[in-house]
Structures are given as C-alpha cells and as structure tokens.
Length: 540
Image (tube, rainbow, N blue to C red; front, side):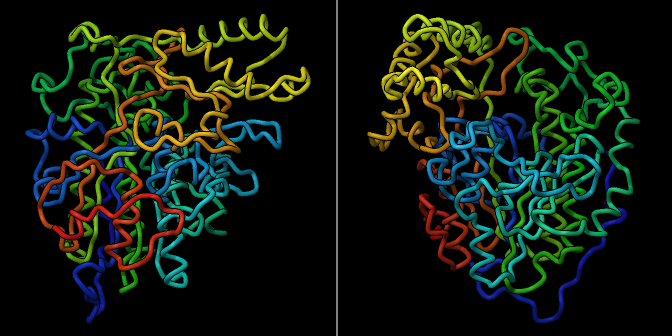
C-alpha cells in the first residue's frame, strides 16, 4: 500500500505548551466511518493490529448501545445530527434532497452554485452548509473563542465533509471523482492552500490505478465473512466479483473517472494521507485553544451492496482501514501526547444483514420491497379516487411528496389526501408504518416506534408521507440494490484526555456526542442541542 509517510513533516510544539487541565484537550478528533456495523469490530478483532481498533477499544470508554434516532439512516442526515447534537426536525437536513415548496423544485442538501470549486476544474466543489439550519459544535467553538479555534473536516464524500465542518470552519475537503483530487469550496476559503495543491500534484490517485486490489491476508483465512451462497454478489459492473481486481481496467470500464477509487481501501488511504499533510500545515492543535478535526472514512462507499456488507471484500477493507486508523493515532499521539487529545470513534451509518440471508439462514420474516411497484399502484389509486393527474411529485428515501399545486387546483384538502396516501400504503406487506405529515405536526411521540418519524420531520422540508419498512425488509428496484439500512446502531468509543477504560450499556444517542465534547471542553453547547451529556464518560 502506498503511503505518504516519507513526506509528512513532523511538528514540534513550543516550550511551555501544556494542557490547562485533564479535561481541556488541545484537539478533538472525530474518526467517523460510513457504514460501520457494530458487529465488525468483534467479527474482525483477531485480525486487527494493536494500533487501530484494538487500541481504541482496549483503552477507551465504550458506549455499547449507541444509536441514531432518525427515521432515515442516510450519511447526510446522520452527519448533520452528529455535528449539531440535534435531529433533522431542528437542523433541517431531512434527506439528501427534498422538495422546496416555496421554490417548487427539488433541492440538494449541500449543492450550492453560489460557490465555486477549489482544487479542480469540476463542479464537485459547488457546495455549502447554507441549508443547515442550526450551528455545529465547530461553529460554537468559533463563536466562543472569537475565531481562534481551528475547525477542519476531511472526507471522501462532499455531504460528510460539509456537515462535519459546519458553517464557520477553516476548511472542509473531499474527494473529487472527476479529477482524483482533494477539493474544497469557496464557501470556506477564497484560495486553495498551497500545501493541498502540492498534495494533489503528487497524483497519488493515478498510482493506485496501476495496481490490483488483492487480499491483505490469505483469502482462505477470511472465515469471518458470510458465504456468497446467502446473498448474490453483483461485483463491479455486475461481473467482477472475485479478487484480484485490476484497478486500471475497472477505471476504464466504468467511464474513466476516479469514482471507483472510493469503493476500494485506497480511498481511505487518500483520506488518511491528506489529513496527515493537513495537520502540521494548518497548525491544528498548536496552541492552547482547542481545535476540532473530523476525519470521515468510508466502507466500500456505493459498492458495498454490490458485494454485500459482510463479504470478503468488506472484511479486507476493514483490515486495511485498521492500519490507516493506527497510522493516524500514532501520528497525533506522538505529536501531542494522548492526554492532549480527545478522540472519539463512531459510525455515520450502519449496515443491515441481507434480507435473503436472514430469510434463508434463520427463517426470519425478512424480504424485498419494491418501491416502484408500490408507487405505481398508489398513483392508480389516486387517479381513481381524485381524478387523473401527476399526484406524486417525488418519492425518495422513504418520503413521498405530493404535487400540492394539483391538490390545490382540484380544491382538495391537503391533510385528507395525505391521510389517504398513508392509509393506502399501510396496507402493503413490508411497510410497518406510513405516517401523514399532518399527523406528525399535530401529535407528539416521545419514545416508542413513532419517535424517529418526529425526529426526522421538518415542516418546511419533509415529505407529505413518511414510511418505515418492516424489520428485515429492504427496498430494491427492478435491477439494482437500493442504498438503505434499517439498522440505527453504530459503535461509539472515547479515547485520550484522561478517559478511563470502561463500558456502558445504557442507550446513548448520536445527539449526545456534541454536549459530551462540550462538557470536556468546559463550554456551553449550542442552544439548539437536544442530546444529553454521557456522564459515564465524564465521571468514570
């Protein structure tokens, strides 16, 4: 595996730079992993080295019952939740995209043409956090330290980087699949830093396409993975589903972009190497004012369902990711000292077991749900009930948006139409609940199965009807897997800054991370925070 270790400038702190107290770390580092199933650490434990996952879990404080309480388990939704300490009902990020009822058009959560790409000629940097409706922890640090705290994020995907960084960050960087470079947006800075330009000029992404992805260890030893007989392995381009994978050929056959690099372990290598370049160049953690850095890794990215979340390819990805995390930990601990750091490791999303596997292996009531067929039947029902028309404006990720102009034109009661849609969908096998927006507005559901609906609902952005699938059921269109999970549990481990080894099995929530960090730093969290301090971490 290629590494930038040979060209990383090590940093030396000035004399007298010490921590103010045990609970005021110089730098907070969030290590966040997209698609991080709680099973993975235990499943692959014996194959991990001592410096990565094992180091954090054997020395840190583990929150073993940690969840996102949102209806939609999307990276954009959950990153906004993690960074703000509040759910979409408050922060406004209800989905990757939604219908703006005022502008009468679909809008993306991060796309913003008011800003330009820095670092490449593509439009992949036209992004901002403008649609995030509340401050992040980084924003709060900026305000309380009068701008002295340094806030940065690095991720493979734009939404993860943007929502981790927030509004006031000094830098947010993500991978550009068009150019293979790390890029940013003029939303954060007017000029792309020279050190980042120098990194891009190394053209490391090109070097990975001269290689083949082969197993890190003998493939016969990957016994922790689920046999392919229990779930169909589509593989790259629907035909390459066994090691080795010729990277150059994959790039050529997939259109010539660098997008496929995100689905391999080298995507995580890019993130690690770029982060280690950034820390000394941006002087993150160089003074006594606490800084915040969020590093987001990805687990095979968009191809994870083509191989299966418990495939040999996923196992190999985590064994290699373990080494990347070990490199990052060693670098910051050698430079700062463990007690000068507060590190947390968590997942951005989790992964569900394949429905076919659950059904065939354990006789569970799991199955596949076809959203296209359901929407087609719904459209026919509405045409019969209310007359011909394009009633469904958008169906995306468990949310149905009605054509409200049509509803108004036909002089119908919007709430009655919403209820009719929800009642119709509730008859489908595979749908546990379909809830009309007006019901979520009129009622309060603290605790219980309907609380995630309310957590995910924003009156100005959410759909007219929200859907929850039955446990074990997974949506799938006619030809391709759908990016979906019903598993809201992810790992959470705290490390450094006086953290003592321990475990709690009390249920904790992603909204609790921000107030817990704020308590460590001795600052008030943003006023919009709804989570609570995880006191076991502080007082253990």
